[in-house]
Image 1 (spheres, rainbow, N blue to C red):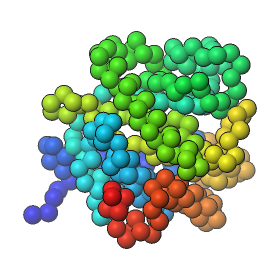
Image 2: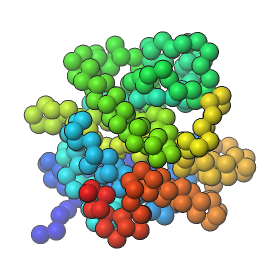
Image 3: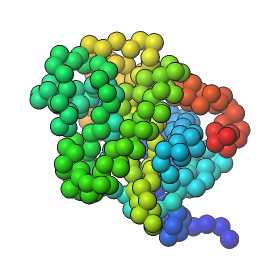
Image 4: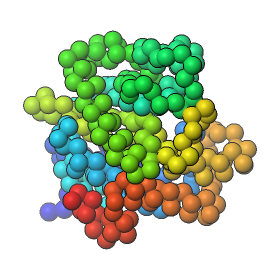
Length: 287
Ligand code: PZK
């Protein structure tokens, strides 16, 4: 009997379906967002790159925390997952000072309640990685909160466990990435509870959409770093003079091809697997 999937929701670039009471299907599209707007032009295979990377990390981090992955489908872009009760807090780990962390540091000298040394440059490596919780605000944007607020939302013991797991995942993945030429500046984890109340890693994990990937070769603190994957698209949009409101611009073929190549390059560096081999047999990423 064929499975019927009930559409539960759309993210900016992916779709969520219910397969049954216990299982969800996460489908990654080829849509790309920049400056918070989804562009009308797709990046071929982007969804497969992100799905393959997530599956790669899930297969290699089970010793740190269990995760929701049940099956990587042979289309290479969808994951069958255990249904969890998601925590109402996003768990961001930052190893470098960028984005909202840099803005908070400039304004207050701290990031989500973590005091930091004075005089750090934009994109500086932090003395040690920090966990900065966030919640989905009504605006749809993430809103940084402090650890006390996160503890109130999920309980102090659960928050302590989430912090410990997130730091261990970041330590594992950032060491792997940096050895392969990619700086994992920061990354966002979404955790949930299974039916036994065990903490489980959900969502996508350690992809360029849930993280900041920077090329290690050109890393230089003192300014914003180029994005490993989206820089061509951003540069094109800046050259156009687009006002960054919806709708975004169509992107020309050379920018699409360059961007696709960057996604594929990140996939190949991190997994050690040729992307064509992933397309031929997605299960290869789990071995
Ligand atoms: C869950 N989202 C985000 C929204 C998407 C994704 N394992 C899980 N159990 C229960 N809920 C979720 C998950 C996961 N992962 C994820 N919302 C709920 C989301 C829209 C589209 F693809």
